[in-house]
Length: 199
Image (cartoon, rainbow, N blue to C red; front, side):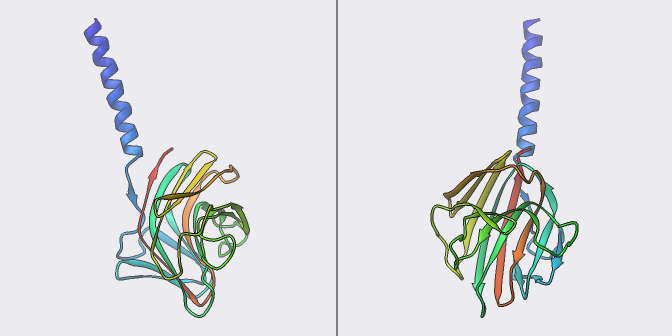
């Protein structure tokens, strides 16, 4: 009887471990070849150049088909001025505004910008800098790594493996990932985009 109980408990533990492992598996958001798995809103032009996702030309957003609530995400980004100030962001738990699908997403934004006070590493809510980054670690025209972890209301950002922002907020519960093209005269680039579901 004891052996049977031990076997049952062991099987349950293995089952739980299998579920946890499946939830923690990293999933690619970008295949490096085309825009399969993404949809575009707004005026920005999006393309794939030499394995890199590139956005330029105006205000707009590119959303992933994937959506989730609790997650960990990692990606490599570069923003470059091309005649105007550069500004972008990586959105999460984000959805298109019902009254204007081409407008700014309703959700959280991990800021990507080097020319204002609420710079790369800040958490933004629509139009509002919300969670302060401890310092600016990135420069225009240079690649950097972003990592984002969100569990419930707890939101954390890392830049180049350094924790720069921690904030608690629960206004937005679930939604897509998205990248912002803010204005003409700038370029945003992204590669090595992955996430894992922590729900």
